Image (cartoon, rainbow, N blue to C red; front, side):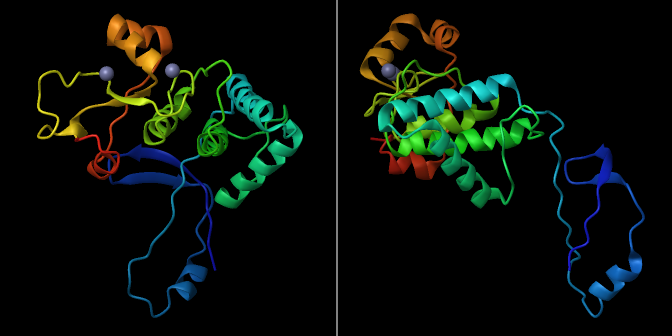
Length: 224
Ligand SMILES: [Zn+2]
Ligand SMILES: [Zn+2]
């Protein structure tokens, strides 16, 4: 049996949290639950996002759905149902982008990641490129790299560029690639990045270089 309470955070250290619980804990019930148990008494913590999802997030979700519709011909309404079901299967929670919905920035962020997954898996072309919102950035640019999809135009078989800091004359085989950031860029956008330089390129396209772990670096053959 689960005992659920809500609480307000009073102080937060890296590994120590003080909270005021909103109601009195039912000690008797806990004693019954822990009777004869000497293991660690675990609890679950969930930080509740106070930010309601934004209009930009809704626009982003519809831009993604629009591109899937343009490519597959599947009506937006039925696409919405599919992705809502996927989100529910993943989280056990409902999601809605309607005006009265109280879903949060984090929740809709995850919902749009679910749609992005489909876009990458099925190589759906981006019609106009996307303005990637902060909550989706990490996931989006990571998926672009691992699926070699140009993060600006969505072309497949993109180059993997050492993004923020160039490899230069360092030896590709011996250098530690996990200290670098990467972006997936098609021929055209890769060339443009080197012509403009990383700073101007970032100002123009808002691309974020992302770090990769050793396993991914190896799997993608980045070390040559
Ligand atoms: Zn491109
Ligand atoms: Zn490059």
